[in-house]
Image (cartoon, rainbow, N blue to C red; front, side):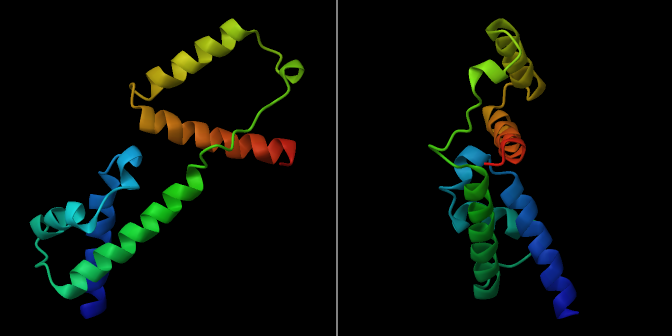
Length: 122
């Protein structure tokens, strides 16, 4: 029974952490997550605080691996078959597809950078 409750707590904590924008996740403290956990019916105990801290740390580490500031994958321009105007149009479509949410745009760009690294072997 305790393991089942703990599993449900971790699911609730992950859901609450998931509501934090990626751009703010790095700076988030457990105090930002605890009200959501308490609203889900879990009393705030030392064990709950510990679980929140651990899962928040894990989420931050996962986000840091996705965001790699200062390290940009660049393709040689001659290998890009499309004109600048087309690339600009695609960039605007990406922003529109993400409803103007630049944290989602950044997440998609990170995913594309990983893909580019796989293609170039970098």
